[in-house]
Image 1 (cartoon, one colour):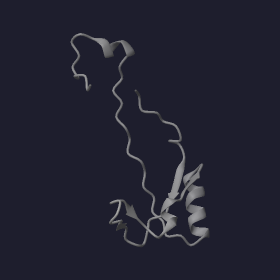
Image 2 (cartoon, rainbow, N blue to C red; image 1 turned 90 degrees about the vertical axis):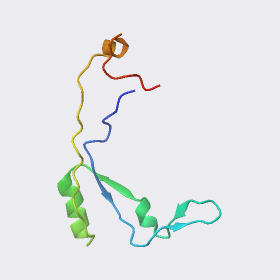
Image 3 (cartoon, rainbow, N blue to C red; image 1 turned 30 degrees about the horizontal axis):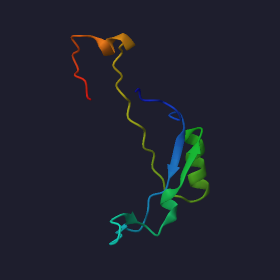
Amino acid sequence: MTSGRANSEKWYLEYQSIERSVIDPLTGNTRNVDTREQLKMPFDTLEDAVAYAKANNIPHRVIDRPKSKRIPRSYSENFDYDRKLPWTH
């Protein structure tokens, strides 16, 4: 499988929870009363996201995504006898 780049050109505004998460004693899952943590608002440009945050008095910081290193190779190299990277399965 290959890593896709769908929706990688969008900018997202995500809320960070103010309250601490609590571990549910019955299931062991973490839960939080603050439902804003579940929001992920997409924007087409960075300027739109920052303008929305400023207009609604939302404290914000910009975190740019790391650049991915792609190793150029052809599909047939996956089946080479003398592979330099071993199979993972």
